[in-house]
Image (cartoon, rainbow, N blue to C red; front, top):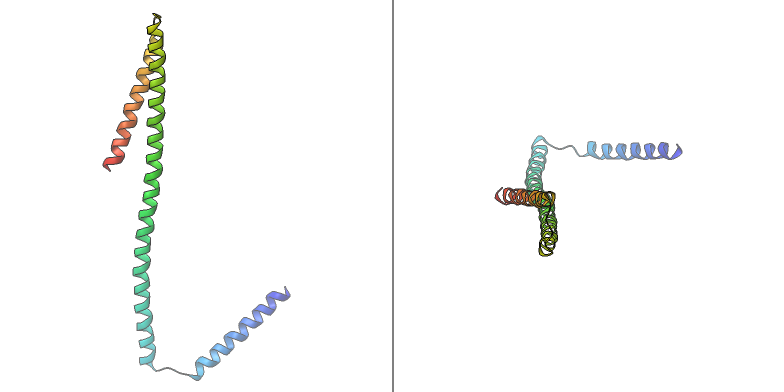
Amino acid sequence: MKRTILVTIMLLFAGLIAFAQQTGTAQSSAQIKQNAQQTLTQAKSNSSQFESTMDTLNALNGGNIDAGLYEKLKAEIDRLEADIKNEQTQMQAKLDKGTKVSSFMVDKIQRLIDQYNSAIADLERFVSR
C-alpha cells in the first residue's frame, strides 16, 4: 500500500514537472502543425512496416499450416501402404500354402486400397490448391 502511494506521488510530481516545462515553452500553431506532420509521416511509415511484417507472418503461418497438413497426409499414406503390403503378404503366404483365403481378408485389403486412394485424392487436392 505504501509503495502504491509513493509511486502515485512520484508520478504526480513527474507530471507536474513535465507540465511546468511545457507551459514555459509555448509553441506557435505552425510549430505544432509541423510536429503533427512529422508524427503523421512517421505513423504512416510504421503502418506500412506493420502491414509488411504482418504479410510475412501470415505467409509463415500458412507455411506451418501446410507443413502440418502435408505431414498428416504423408503419414496416413505411409501407414496405409504398410498395412496393404502386410495384408497382401499374409494373403500371398496363405495362397502359397494352398489355404483358402476368407472373403473377410479380401474385403479388408480392398477397404485399405480404397482408403489409400482417398488419401491420394486428399493429397492431390492439397497440391492443387
